[in-house]
Image 1 (cartoon, rainbow, N blue to C red):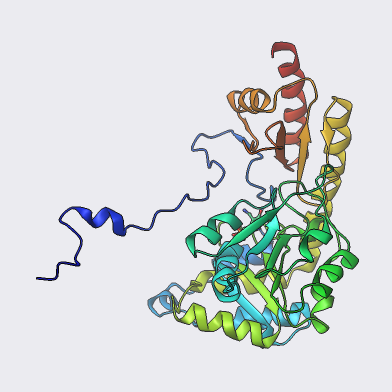
Image 2: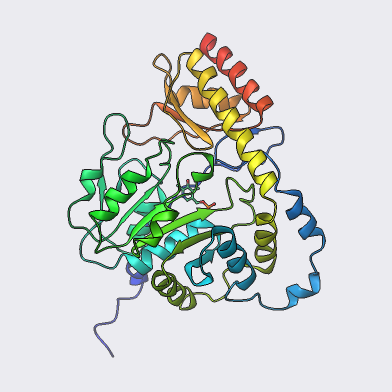
Length: 360
Ligand code: PMP
């Protein structure tokens, strides 16, 4: 008998223990105003609805194309890059997880901001990647000089979340200049609502990976489509990891609907323009009510009220059927992250907040 074996009952020591990411609530009740997970308040494009209606159910009998050919080609054409520069996944969460496991394999720590997308530290822990959080400055900006030191890779969203603050292309380029020997991932989940994309920098930096999602600007969070664009060498490395894990990540419906969405640029432009207008109005209205709002380039507003406790405001709104996001983390516990909804939903938010001030 092998005495090295675990003692009876000791199987628990073999479990992988991680602190999971906590997604925003998806309430079951009807008539909720849902401003808590940065979904798009408008439906997907009519081109997507049409494609769904025309879908051939018999096709579901077969495995989907593992290379995601149609969607990859549509994305490559849309962005003016080669098909060998596009990787698609089940939402950008899947794409980002693949990027972590593919690119962050150094003894040196991966750098990302302390206030950022809270999934980054979760993947670092899951894949046992050393990481170091770099504190944002007092106005919640990323300090580029923090990223000059030797590291095992860099990742940040632009615009950042949950702050909504965007950095210019010169900032991204500065980070890339100082990190030529590692992979730099720019998570552009919210770029369609403001700011300049880092995509033009791909021509000069083969260590840059840009990730995008259909969940926000394309109103398709429920379909789960994300993608990355990078040099053929980076994309090939991600494909190799994907095929070592699960060849068929994208289902047939997602592949078809994702390609259909790209054909309707007019609808995309109209809905993103509307969200930007509603967001700018929200910053004005909330500021009039005494909130301090960060300068958002995303489809949400990050705001704090100097007279009212963030958690109490969150609870009051929730009680009155309006879900926003509140994070209990250091530095941000007095803030609410409010997703931009329809104009009428935002009116309900402003009215409900006015009532909260009278009763808190
Ligand atoms: N990056 C950032 C910064 C996000 O806020 C989100 C949304 N939770 C994602 C990536 C992932 O979005 P999805 O998986 O829906 O594409």
